[in-house]
Length: 574
Image (cartoon, rainbow, N blue to C red; front, side, top):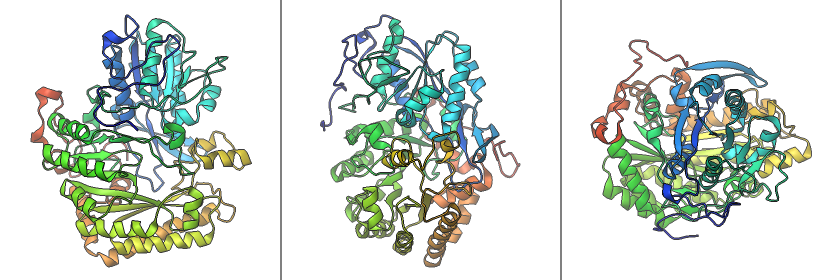
């Protein structure tokens, strides 16, 4: 792994024109004389109102990185963020798993907003359940722009690219894996009027190319990558509403301190997207980025969206020192599953001292047998000790548990129940009990498809979003979907019920969270979303520290509260 502090990133490959593809280069370094007219699209999101999930629109950090890289290289970049621009608009539609809800601009509206002279359209596609929406968006764009190059990228575009290219003639190519350098190579080809054949990291339909569809070569250094081009995105629209990624603690923004994950969990598609290479940024650089967001956007909370945020003790402590030296009165959290090996009392206290308020742990099971099947290298006693320490120093925590894996037995379920009890006694605040679903690109998905247990059809696209609903399908021959649903509700009730008995003050905290918008836990967030829908944040939550803003630097002004429960001004998404 490369060390911190390098000037720019390089790639270990060249494209077929033998021109090195370097992220972070200046416009004059590009081989094409004129940049391409590129539009980047974030399709509308899809939610399942009748499920236990709390999914909602969040700023797309991957697309913001792509936008920055292309713009810095001299390409003309515009962004259509459909989920933000239409965040107050919703449309229900029927699917094989029931009625779902689309939030954002319609595919036709997206196509209508693209520049008339667009040459390349890049569509971000992260989740399988949003493939039908991405497919419709690509089709509408193709109808209006028959000569444009339409490219998909992201986690599901990587894992599902064969099916995407077979099913949707409107899509010309899929970028596989880490996208910056490959997207830049594609844009350079488009600008030069060249085809995409011969590019590593690009999957083409029916290609006779000598270069197989392989992952993009991972970036070797991260500190020279341009910071996300958030100025191209309507961040004000997101800030008019409470957070949907981490617990809502004011104006927030996502940040990546690392990329990739060094582990190979059987249910996860990360190895197919990132391999197992784990690359970290200089913690000083991460802190500088955050300080800029506080100065320019009035950010109050940072959500780390790393796949595995806390694996290096020295990095974590170094970041705490760096952020403490730059920013006061900032809160941050790790809402994605983390590990516990380095989270001892010294580290946890330092996290809390520097503003960390929420950490998600990812044991996935209370059964050692299942952890071995998952290839999940976790020591449960150490995690329980870390949870207890986190509670003692004032951090809020959450654990994730999966039930219903094809190999799981009832004895494993009971062991997970005992682990939830122990976690509640240790002071853990939240628990997400999730029914197993197979993700494209994961080892479990491939095994189910190969065995014929999972048929890839239109209904299979929604297995991820339906996993917390009554329509979810079981892939375990010993456990019906109905029994898993009952177990899910029982385990969640057991955990939170015991937590309230052991910590009765939480009852008052839950009530206060709904009245003030000052959330502390995932349960606060879930109740808010299911009770109020996408209602705007309270006045206090939105603007409590807005004087930080320097509008002359960023052009962003504090959002005026657009919905007030006292006036009944809820938005249309309810």
